[in-house]
Length: 298
Image 1 (cartoon, rainbow, N blue to C red):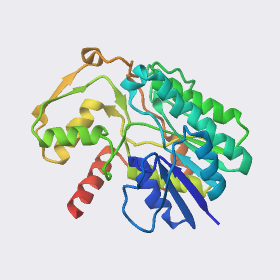
Image 2: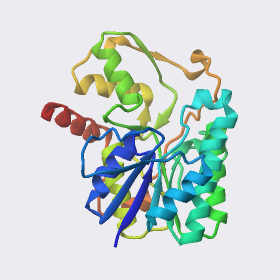
Image 3: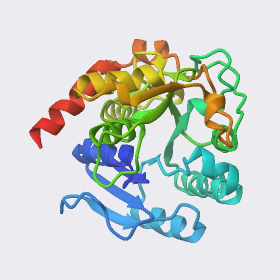
């Protein structure tokens, strides 16, 4: 019997995972919200706030999954600097709550992590590179990784970066922000000095499915194949959707005067995962073409 519980299921990646894992025997989508945004009766959904220890224990004890995928996170990098207690509660204490139940019922935990655990001086980074976060968000995600590794549970930590795509009532990711603004003919500023390998959520979800079904463990980087600046990514979005690239103003990170420091040469090396997994890894062009086709279908 394959039973899985997905936290943060109303988010972009959570929605994709819920759909892809629906071929398993029993899948429980959970989130802080009262209802699941995917209005399909085949989906099981239950309210779950991972910062509520008693609720976590109750839901997991009742459902008894074999696998938990934790996509729930406080991800707003700027707000993390202002609301550190909330960021810690979700990104660290929430993970501790999940770990307790994983220990009790011998459940495997898949934790979604980020390239923001690195300082961005020498990216892209491999699974073996030493983390050194330069903002509070990255610090909480690294702390969660370390707690999981020390917890003596079955685990897989999946690091990804710049996860993008379209979903139902999802928060703005980089793609949506660029796409919507350009469609509305609004000028946007995009940094030329931050580099990553953006990851289509739909592709990431299928990669996670294969990793789970093959019972992989440890730390694994799953990301896109194309390493480029945010500015070049924005230009590709404009090109693919025939939007006005002249609305995109190139700037450098210091010009934005952001509270949280950003890794400049971030991103992740995916050599290890490409050797292990059979699922193709998408480039930015392939990811944008995928979205284009989905939008056309709708």
